[in-house]
Image (cartoon, rainbow, N blue to C red; front, side, top):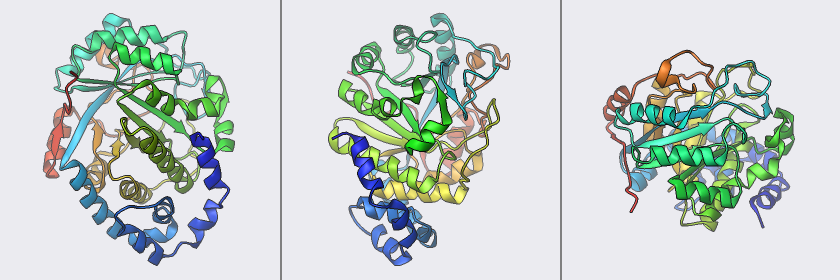
Length: 367
């Protein structure tokens, strides 16, 4: 049984009714448990849990320190290409948007990698638009092989692949995958993905599992907050992460909480997600998945990101640039979305230390 069968079974139980009927007392009982069940997790995502937010935050802090210590792992993105074959209504790389398109040469990728490495960062996330023609697997492998001399860890955020293709990239030096389902609700998914390969809901949904089967060291999941009701979407995200944790214990599973930011096309979010909502979902997820990494990107404001450090976050981006070649020439090419936290790596280090935490640039060595 795959994850879709698990997700569908929970949907059929009436998730909306559970959320509506949960009481603060039910939430309080869930917060104190040593192992939080799926229904406890749903209770902590409910409107009633807003009355228990401080209690949840304190417990999330204790659980995070116990499992991860007082450290924040730092990484940065490097965009290889912004060509895309999909028509997704929320994305700046939408094939219909009139933006400057570019694919870096392998030499240009190395030059930008060198610029990043000079900041001290050793964890890199390489990204492309979803075009197999302009950014094929062999090109991504060649870029990885060139970059691996500068970085201890290279993750990818690209189009979904088959198992053998993930194995090819692992052999080239990739050790992590980030892939967002964007939205778990199948109806909404169909509505916001108008054309292109990404319209295949199940192929994308099963990509994280294919990466696990290929032997990927880390897999990072996420939903794009603002496309659908956040409570039901984050519940699906948590279910997906636990499903993979249980089935593939050798793979490190983590989650991200990207909130829609302005981009070319000027898509407006369908559902409001407040800062308080973000705190609730992060603390609930931390209590549900005590050993899962939690990532917050530069989509969020600097002050807000700083405040999230003690609530369960373990990984943050720094010195980000969403433009292809943006660090090379600064020609103002169109990025995937607008960055909110524009602080440098040095500034992020200082901010993390002010919170009493240690910024970590490198957390493992390949043997």
